[in-house]
Image (cartoon, rainbow over all chains, first blue to last red):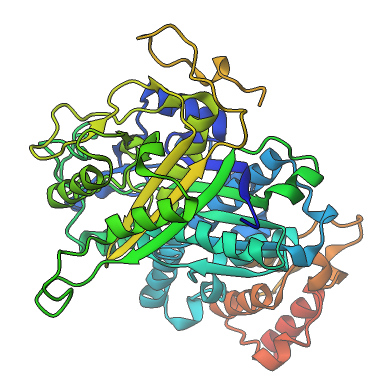
Length: 437
Length: 83
């Protein structure tokens, strides 16, 4: 086996809340973070619903000099990284700087910052474009700023595989731990809720034009009509299980037991020959399960990609039915509460899946009233479902053919319990849950 | 005649590079940009803003020579007088 890679810290900055407790209680209660965009006036755009990080602006915690040279997506990443390191009980200054690495996912880089500088370029001229544009837009900016801030001078990188990026980053973090790193800051965030970002996303044709936030993003529903964007994500601290234990982190959230990525072949006669259609998502899922040494029957829950586009929903449901049998495994999509967070989406799903393992509760998919014909999946809907969750499969698909899967498993015997609330009751508030971890 | 003051410089510093590192109480005008926590991109941004607002160009090869806020104030005021 060699290295066992565990997640020892989680930092969440999402439309469902800032910090684990806030996110988890909103997720279990099905409190949606979706609404009409407030970061700019969206009335001139066909898509107007998004998941925004609301309430007190968490990015005010980012030091002023760092703030002016970075995009909001990096601000959210810096806040999440700080939360994650604190959650893991890591003092970076106490560890060897060359044994700490950083690999985050980025989907579109610093679009809001970029838009502001482009406006200056056209309104006032090239001399008015700030020099920080040269580093703020760049995909690796969050990784680089986290690395600089905490003195993490081990292996660093960024993964740009659109919405599957955070799972691919997790896989890369695991490779780093098999090398010389003992701790890797990973995960991802995104914040593309500006006119430039929204217009870029509109070009994919997938954004929902439904204006009612409760109806705009309904994956697997017969009324599915696209997805909504969101901002935020999660940063995760990944460590080798033994070295984590040596520094006193004896109760990790879970293991990253398997990872895989598969590129979808282009449609058409030139690809795939005469054989059966090659489903990239299915290959990724099966490869990740094989990597983890887990049979499909050993999976307790699937966190679906949940596109919200009818054909992609149907394709994912068919993939799950082929692997697990029709209605063969509980499936959920808590991203119905946040929208699709691009580079942050799968990172948040990993965080949420680890909490499901911790507390024995599968969080619900919200808003879906009738499954689309052909979607033969056991979708956990409306309220959280108590279940013994020892193994979770997280799936993610990115625009352009990216597919990724990760298998998360409980560590040892510690998470064997199902949430012991009265059967059929609504999910409890996070404050009532096992915060004594 | 317009003057480029220490207050102007401080305002431009914050706009370009954010709040300076809290110092030991000594006058920040004579503290180096490095000690104030500003990197070379932040200082380049200050020069660009000064040119936009006060019409004095501070060439890149001069920017690297100006170590402190008061160096900037002196340079810019010198150029405004001769302009």
